[in-house]
Length: 318
Image (tube, helix red, strand yellow):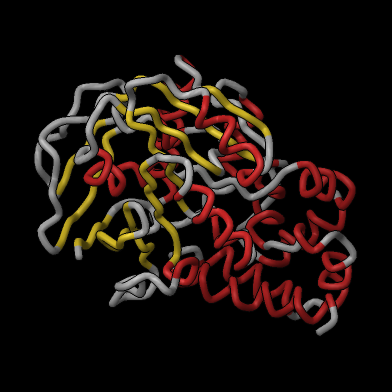
């Protein structure tokens, strides 16, 4: 399949995802691009890793462009082509959804502390601070007293909702392009990647609140490939702490062989492993596929324990 045909297919597929994600404006734009031969050819002229709709839509929002209709979006892109392409080439899709901490917390709270957390594909490291946020499970009064946002989650299937937050004594992250939670431009880019729609206001508020927490006490951040840089980062964790390697919506960007290599690598590092990914990432795991599409598969040390909402607002225990 030629590049242009693949670009059109990717954008058409994402139009469906945008509709399901309560973002009709993005759905209209994605569908418009898929049928626009000139735009498809222009996008396909860039490296394949720069074809993603989220990246282009985020770039336009980052530059203050319109996302209300395809016509307005297209006009902005064509008029400001060089500026848009510059952002597309410099940036990458690094959605850092802090709400996922609500679905990671029941797993982390069961591990013997204190904990040393390491996140691969960490972006700005917002998910490295589960002990600094507050949590409301099933509408109960918030757990925790930290300065961060309140993260709400509805549970099913007997989730072991914790009555305390874990003690975290060290935090490290690795990313190809780490972001700085204290940098206005980097936080602005994360904001631009949030889909406009019914839940945008809540997600923006959570993002900004979490960024303030991280900026006040930054983690150790390392730029590099997760397969190459993880062992050295694990070695930096303090003695006496339970080292936990975690990730959310990251390994889908790796090929099958790379995912298998990662699983083997983590298994040999003597750490605990918390995976929160689409079920196809490790489809061979027992119970990997959720009963309802759109949920992530949550696993501890390669054993599926639950299925989680993409933004952390739902957790089904298995």
